[in-house]
Image (cartoon, helix red, strand yellow):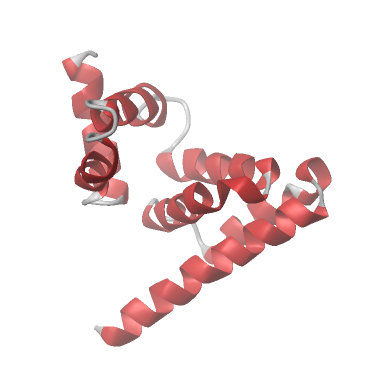
Length: 131
């Protein structure tokens, strides 16, 4: 693990979800020590922090890929829809990225993706209304 990539990954993860790193640690480090740091360093430090694409575009690509993979990605898809919103993607951009995957992942995968996005949007609306 490189400190540079872990630091870069932690910064990206904190921008998308300030509690992500600690939530991953709490959930997985008891099962697999260091898993949270590994994920933050590799996924966010080596990939999301790369130059060449802005964070919003990377998140839209992630949402599209997870949607195309189908129903088994629901939890990760919901997290990344929320991250796409945090990175500045609009609801229209997110739903269009998911809908495009009907061509590549099939209609059921796209529908499952849209359902996951609708859940995230509804939760965001509830949170906004609450305060």
